[in-house]
Image (cartoon, rainbow, N blue to C red):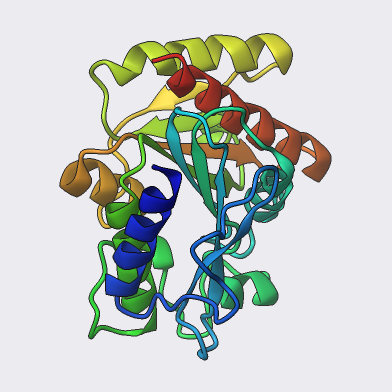
Length: 252
């Protein structure tokens, strides 16, 4: 069953435009306690970025994590990279640590073409650079069909000052609201500070959250830490929240 599952993943990946498997990969590319490169998006271009994959070998939730959408939101991609050392006992995890590598290298919200990746979803295969990249990311999510997507972001200030810092955006509510309430209770207990984490709905139009929630009907948790806090605290909060989401969806 494991071999058949991996073959299915390989076939799905090859069908995605631009998602070319690494030459050194084979059907045994999911070892226990190791993330391996599952595919490379926009390979050979300045937007080239890796998709990592881990399979526990046990039944459990399928998790998709993405960081580095905005290159100046450092905690997002640092937390995603730290999560490459987290190996859930059940289920599968797919991670894109640095979705917009150009922007990360420039320490900028947008890449060189001055287009916001997180306003370009679901993308187009024949669009501009960010539309093509968002199309490939969206296609990976569609093919992988995770139970939940964790989208790691940051804001310049707290939500009390008109920004989004210390908030979680959930595009699909309903049954997922109970998990969100558990998540908020957890983080506000372990990370006590004056401004607690809160919830926002209505993700921005053409964001990953809005597109995946509406078009694929997959719940997306966008985590917004606040850049007024230290980088160490922000990364810790992002990692704690991601691990708790994985735990909550593992209880089903």
